Image 1 (cartoon, rainbow, N blue to C red):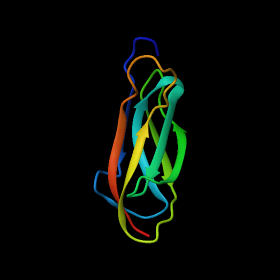
Image 2: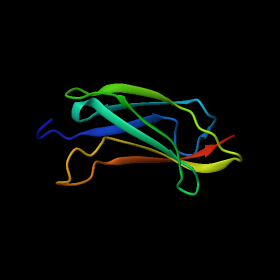
Image 3: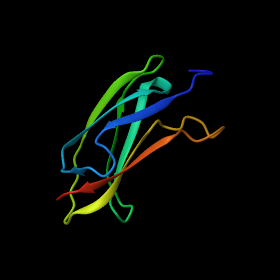
Length: 104
C-alpha cells in the first residue's frame, strides 16, 4: 500500500449507543494486508475483549466482527478500532474510539 492513504471507518454501532455482549460491529477499511484490530475497554481502561478481522487492502471493503464481554454493572466503555502498527516510523495509524454504554 505504498503511497496510499489507509483508513478504518466504523459504521455501527455509533458513538453513545447502548450495547450488550455479543454486539456486532460493521465498517469499511483499506489497510496494510487488510488487517483491522479492535479492543473494548471498561470505564477504568481495563481490557474487556480484543481481536482482529479482515477488511479491504488495495481496494476498500467491508468488515464486521462480534464483541463478547462481561461487566457487573452498566458503564461507559470504549471501543477502539484501527489498523495494526507495522513499523515504528512515521505517524501512528488513525484510531476510531467510540464511547459506548456497556450493559451487563
